[in-house]
Length: 268
Image (spheres, rainbow, N blue to C red):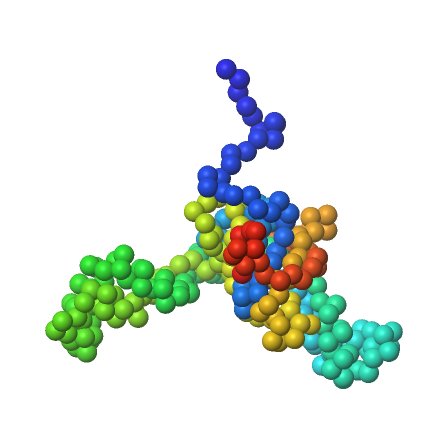
C-alpha cells in the first residue's frame, strides 16, 4: 500500500464544509458591524472558529493630517482642486485609507503570562450558558447570592426557564485576551478553510464611509486579500514584539445582499 505525503499537496477536507467561494475575500456585510471571511481567506490567515482576526489601517494618520493641515493633506487638495477644511476634501482624502487584515495576537503581561478578560457574550449566549450550567449556577446563587436574588429564584410558581433568565444576568466567562475580534463559524464545519463571521462596528463604518448612512445596510462591500503584497509588521503583545502577517485589502465591488430563494445561500 502506498504512503501519501505532504509532497503531493494533499490535505484532509473539513467534514461538513460546503465550498461556496474559492477566493480569499472579506465581505463587509450589510448587517451593521458584520464581516465574513471566505474559506480561502481563513485558510490563508490560518484561523478557525474561536480564533481572532484584527485590522490595521492608516485611518488615524489621515485623520491627524486633516486636523493639522499637514503638508500631505494640503498637497492632496492642491492636486485634486479641493479646499482644505471642506467636507469634500476630507471625504476625498479619507477615501485613500488603506486597510490590512491579519490574525489576532495573544495579549501577555510583563512577565509573559496570559492576560485574562471577560468574554463578550450575547444575551442568547448567556442564556445558553446558564441553561447548560443550570444546576451548579442555581446552587451557587441560592447558597451565596444576595437575599433579593434568592427570593426571586425561590418565588412561588417560578419556572426553570424564568430561573435561567435570572441566572443569565450573572454569566461572566473569563478568557484569555487577544487583539481583534473573535471569529465564529455559522456551520458545523470546523478547522481552517471554513467561512467565518466576526464583528467590528468601528472598522465597518470606516470601510463604508463613502456610502450614505441609510444605504450602508443594503450593500455588501467585497475586498480581496492581496497575497502578493502581504508583509510582516511588529506588534507588542505586552511582553515582547511578535511578527504579524498582514494582507492588504483590495476593493472588488459593492453588491446587494443575496436573500434566500435567489439561487444561493443567504447573505448577510
